[in-house]
Amino acid sequence: MTQQVTDVVVVGAGPVGLFAVFECGMLKMRCHVVDALPAAGGQCTALYPEKPIFDIPGYPRIQAEELIARLGEQAAPFEPVYHLGQQVTALQPNGAGWRIETSAGVQIDAGAVIVAAGCGAFGPNRPPLPGIEAYEGNSVFYLVQRREDFRGKRVVIAGGGDSALDWAISLADVAAKVSVIHRRPKFRGAPESVERLHRLAEGDKLDLVVPYQLAGLEGENGQLTAVQVATLKGEGLRLEADVLLAFYGLSMNLGPIADWQLDLQNNHIAVDPATCQTNRPGIYAVGDIVDYPNKLKLILSGFHECAMAAHAIYHRLHPDEELHWEYSTTKGLPAG
Image (cartoon, rainbow, N blue to C red; front, side, top):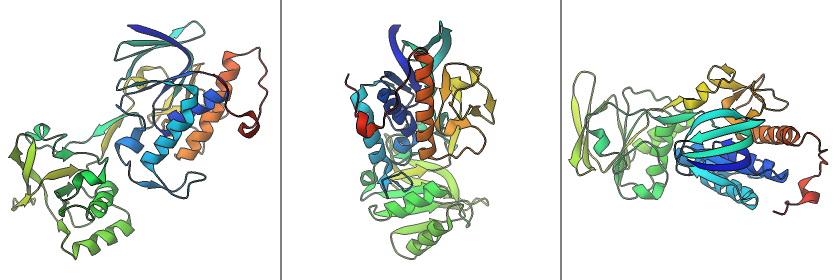
């Protein structure tokens, strides 16, 4: 067990978690960041790195992966310590603060904890196809990180929601062929996306394979050669394919957070909106995982909550010190 000490442990390295590092750093509080994913960015990195975001102040349009890079750059002067690819497995009181342990055998003592875990632990809903595991990571994927990885390939997309439609439309520009499988003619995505999809289907770059569903895979050594589909009546088709993208949504749960004796409301953590503190003193929560009256699930709302939590934590860790507030334009970045 490796033991470390810091001011604040941030659980979650998504955009809100990264901004929490900045807000704590501006108040000269050191942070360690723990995330189960192998890279910082949360859903922005894992699910839609190349999709644009339009409601970040100062950026009329910014791709998700660029936003994460900017937030990482903003946090970097405060030298956060990242513990990626590992999950918090234990949280216990330790004097006036908290001790956490991770699945990698790291133990961290901190004065406070900020939970910025987004929707909690998440993973893909896999289609029930025999042997699909052999293709995962090679030619079967549940998310897209780089559009260029699919240039010139025959891509089969399964699903009828926004993710399926967005990537079908985007990959039609680079793939040799895109086939969209859905069990019924009506799609669940945004009306504008459905309209664009049908327009693309009038050309030779995209086929709508409806009403069909996945029935089997063909290939060897992890590389697909074809995807088998069938109607509910058993009528089958064989689609030659290099890649299958299955967008059947995510299974999400709080994971170990559910055992931390926090006040939960519909799988969200209840907090005081004035401080973002939970029912357990010294544990705070920010971002999509929190709940309070009129809560908005927006990244910019999470940024605001980071500032509230950081100031509350400062007063907790330094009860005898008066915080002389200054704007960042006059204060600059603290040294060291």
